[in-house]
Image (cartoon, rainbow, N blue to C red; front, side, top):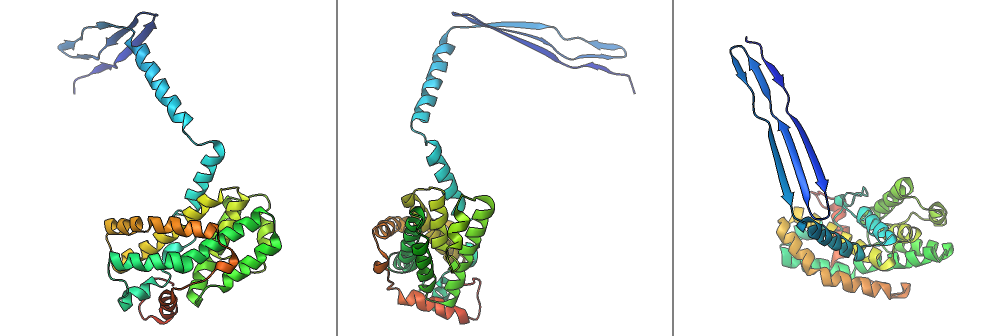
Length: 302
C-alpha cells in the first residue's frame, strides 16, 4: 500500500470592527496530500469582506425584541407557581390516576356512553353536579384552612371529604391518590410546616384535600390551583373513556374543548361555595361506581 501523509485543514478567522466598517479576513490552508509519484498542493486563499454598519441596526432590533418579551414575562413567584402546578397535576406525576375511571368503565359497558356526544354530556354532569364540584369545593376549603393555619377546621374538612365518597372503589381512588400526592410532596416538594399540617388530620387526606394543602403551603394561588386541578380531573376521565369506547386523539380533544366552559363555571362556583353548599345530583354516575365493583371484565380499578 503506498504511503500517504495528510496535513489537516487549518483555519484562522480574524474579525476587526470599527465604527463604520466590519472587516472579516479569513485565511484557509486546505489539506496537503503527498503520495509516491503524485503531489497535490492546494492554493492558499485569502478573502476579505467589508460589511457596512447595517449589522449595528440588526443587533438593535434583536435587543428590542428581547426586552419586550422580558417585560411581559412571569416574575419569579409566578413562574415557580406555574412550574409546580404543571408538575403536580401532570399525568406524569406518580399518583396513579391512569388506573381509575370513576365508574366510566361501567357506563360504557352499560351503553350510557357510546361516542363523543354522550361522553361530553356524562362528564359535564359529573363536573358540575357531581364529584367534580364536590372535589373542587373540598380543595378550596382545605386550601383556605391551611392558609389560615386552622388545623382543627382542616381536620373536619378532611373527614367530611373522606365520608362524602359514594362507593368503595371511589374511596380507594381518591384516598390512594391523596396519599401518593402527600408522600411525593414530602419527598421532593417539601415545605415548612407541611408535616405538621398533615399530622393534624386524623384521617388520610383524599386527593382534592391533599392538593389544596400542598398548594397552600407552597403559596401557589388558589384560583390557578383549582382550575389546574379540574383540568387534570377532566383530562383523566377523557383518557379513560378514550380507551374504553374507544375514541381517537382528535375526538378526545373535542370533548375537552366542549368542557372548557364547564370547568371554568365549576371553579367559580366552588370558589364562592361553603361546605353547606355541597351536594350531588349524579345518581347514575354514583350507581356506575357501585356497579363497577362487580363488573366481570375490568381494565380500571374504579
